[in-house]
Image (tube, rainbow, N blue to C red; front, side, top):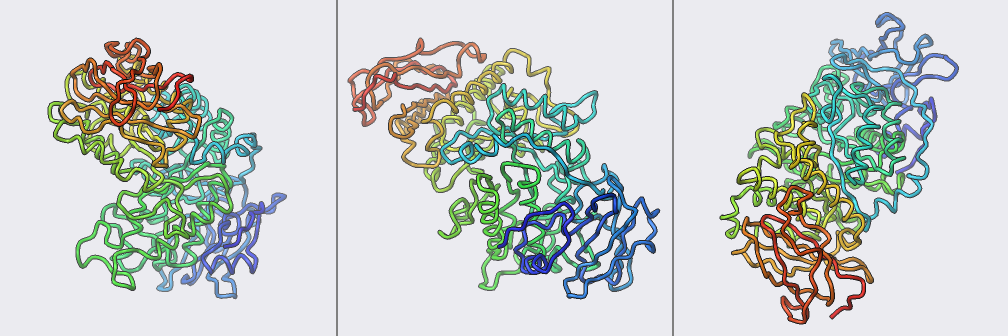
Length: 638
C-alpha cells in the first residue's frame, strides 16, 4: 500500500484513483467528500456513487435546491462525481441528493464528511480541521510508553454519561479538565473512548456509526475533540478510540444503498445483514470499501492523534456464520466459515497502522479462539497489537459471582486463564458490556452481605492487577458503583465519596501506581517467563499464589489471593529468595475499607522449603483478599 499525505484541499490525482480502486488508499479524507477551498473560494465535492443517474449537492448556501449544484461524473469510469460550490462556507450544512438508476431520489450525508449536525439532525457540515498541537513530547515518547513491556492500565469511558452538568452533556473542554484530573489521580495510563464517531442513535453508545470521518457533535466541534486529546497527552495520558469497521446502521441518510444499490454493504442478506444488530455489514471484499475503511482508521490516528484503535466486533467479521443458523450464511470458496476477505482486510489495516503511524496500537475485541490474533501476519496471524481476553473476563466474573462456599469446586475456573495467557498479547477487560442489560454492577455481582461484596470486589481487583496482561476497567468500577451503568445520566459521584466506595477508589489508584512502579508486574505481561505458579491446587482453602517476574535484576512480586471469608493463619508459601518480603499491598487494609488483618508490613523468609523453593513465608491471609509481596533488595536467589 502507498502512503499519501492529505493536503488542506486536495483533489483526486490519477495516483489517488489507482490506490482507491485498488483498495489500498489510506488517506482519502480531503480527497473525497466536501472540502473547503482556500481563500473563501467555496468548497469542492467528490463522492463515489458509480450506479447513480445524477448527483447534486444541496445545502444552506443554495437553499437546498438540487438544480443549482449538479455534480459531474468523471470520465475515467471511477464512479466518482465532482463539482465546486463557490458560495459554500465553513460550518454550512449539506447533503448529496442522489438519483438511483431506477429514478428514485434520496438525500444522503457525506460518507467522508469531517463534521456533522447535532443529532437528531442528519446533515454533514463543511469544516476545516486546523489546530495547533502541543503534544510533540508525548508523540516522541509514545512508542516506548505503549511498548509490550510498558505498563498499560486503561479507563474505559462513555463521554455522555461519565459526568453531566445539570443533566446536560459536558463538552470536550470540560471533559478534558475533569476527566484528565480524575484519570491522573487514579493512576491510569490511558483513556478509552467508546465510539465518538458520529452516530444517530445515542442509545447505541456509538457502535452504530454513520460518521467515519466526523466526530459526534454532541460534545463540541472537531477542534474541541483535538483539544481534549491534546490536553490528556499533556498530562501523560494516552487516548484510545473504539472504531467499528464491521457494520453500520441502516438509517436512510447513511451508507445503506448509498447510490440506490448495495454499494458499501453486501447485496445478499446472508452476507450483508447482521441479524443481531439489525445493521448492514461492510463488503470489505470491495476495493473501494477497503480504501474507505483504511482511510478512516488512519484518519483518526493521523488527524486526531489518537494513540490506538480498539476494533469492535472482530469475531463478527471473521466468521461467515456469526449469529446465523444453518442455511443463513454462504461458505467461503473452500467451503469453510472463515471470512477470508475480512482476514485480508484486517491484516492490511494492521500493516498500514504499523507502517504509517509507528507507536500506535490496534487492539482487537475478539471473543473466540481464532488463532494468532495478535501474532504477525507473516507468521499466519492477524497482526493486531493486542487482544481483549474475553475468556478471562467471563470465567473470572463467573467465579467471583459464586458464594465462597462453592468456590472450592471451581478452582480451575480461575486458574484456567493461565493455560493460554501467553498465546496472545492480552488485555484483561472489565468492560461496559459486563455492567449493562440486567447483569448488574461489578459490586452487585459479588456475593454476600455488603462487607463481603466490597471485600470480594477488592480481592478481584488485586487478582486482576497481579495477573499477566494489560488492564482495562469501565468507568464507575473504580469506586464500586452500586447500580449498573445507564447511558442516560451520569455516574453516582455522590456514592463515590461514601467510605467503602472511597476505599475501593483508593485501592484502584494504589494498584495502578504499584503496577507502574514494579517492573515485575508489567514488563513481561506477554511472556510465560514472567509468571510462575506457587500454589493453585488448594481448592479447599480457595487460595491462589503466583510469582510475577521482570527482567534480570528486577525483584519478583508474590501475589496471593484468599477467596473465602475465612482468615488463614500460618499459611506457608514457597518463595525463591531469602530475607524480608515487604507487604506491598493488602486489599483488606483499613484504608480500603477492610478489617486491617495482615502481616505487619512484611514477613521474613525461612529456610523451610516449600512449593519447589528453598525458602518459604508463613503468612496471615485476610478473608476475601489479595496481597502482594516483594523481597527487599539485599535478598539473593536460591
